[in-house]
Length: 157
Image (cartoon, one colour):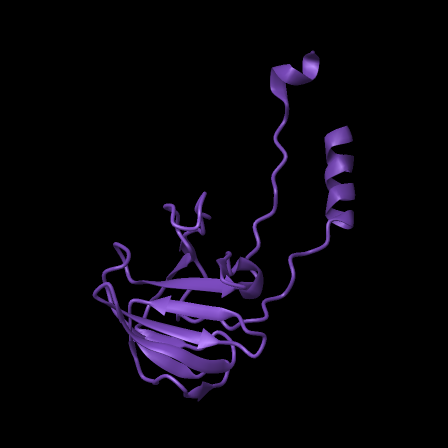
């Protein structure tokens, strides 16, 4: 009974995840295939973005901005949007339909997705603010909630 009451109380006091402020850049179910993993140092290993599942090759601008880079990096097409707030949104592997200096609106078709980043078709979406990478989950409205686990034997002392 206590667990049921506690669950109801938690549901009532925990606010819902914030709404997305970006458009999802890929077509299909909004699925994160591989999550962001911050590196332990600026040059250390990590996964500096989210891999998003895609069901077609059409890529849309998740937010408005100016194309700050459109080219090849390490043998794959990369596209970067600088938002009005100064954030940098990077996407790969893509064939860009826009060039550096172009202004894009949120939702504009800006690239064609190329295969090869994941086993199945996916887009790597990165976000840099102030020169540092962070997960774009909040902007996409797919925050992960912390999950409290029972203490098990530790609770008994």
